Amino acid sequence: MNWSDYPNFSAQEFDCSHCGKNEMKHEFMAKLQHLRTVYGAPMKVTSGYRCPQHPIEAKKAAPGAHASGLACDIGVQGAEAHRLLALALEAGFTGIGVQQKGAGRFLHLDTRPEKALWSY
Image (tube, rainbow, N blue to C red):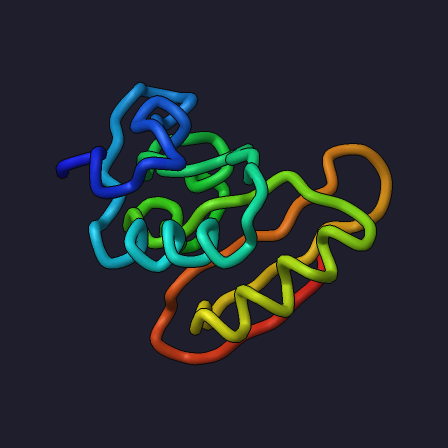
């Protein structure tokens, strides 16, 4: 993948914290770069690609969107989380998870085939 197509992100931000692999998909990254451009502010990636053996993915019945290179979590809270959520919906992200309580607040964004919205 040509990471220069995504000037606001680095490959390292998306490396699996378990094994170091990075299999992010171009179509997801292009959508994320578009979101970052319209958001107009830095977006902190707290989780990008996760290999199927990553502890979070290994607990699931089947690996999720992170393991397909079609998801990431963005650390954001409060009014900025609300603004980013609205822009993510406009940008066409179809899977959105909201964690806005306690420490480690974030929005999960993915491009699954069906629309889904959930809270953690």
